[in-house]
Amino acid sequence: MQHGSAMSSSRSLPLEVMRCETFWERTRGMLLRPRLRADQALLIEPCGSIHMIGMRYAIDVVFVDRTGRVIKVCPNVPPFGFAAARRAHAAWELLAGTCDHLDICAGQQLTFVTR
Image (cartoon, rainbow, N blue to C red; front, top):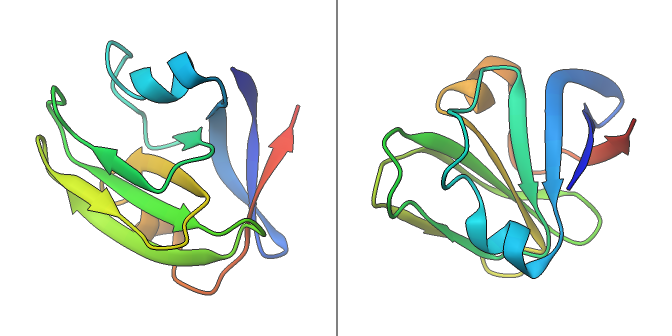
């Protein structure tokens, strides 16, 4: 798992990002991890859909294409819910309400920046 931060178009976002790349990291996702804080995100790559089985709180999910362009924002995905996006390459998972707070919307560019 890599740690880093996030950029939206040309501005830095106040997010500590944990990037899941291996099969086991992607499979685990948020399961058995501490609850996300408002300043954290989990980046799952590659990923075109997520499920909330076993989760106890809602999250925002942002799906991006291979270039990092936001193609779909799914706010407040509830526990035991599901979200997917056609042509998505990766999913950013954030605490519910974060997308609204940071004005993340379709068409923006999100970039993972390694520390």
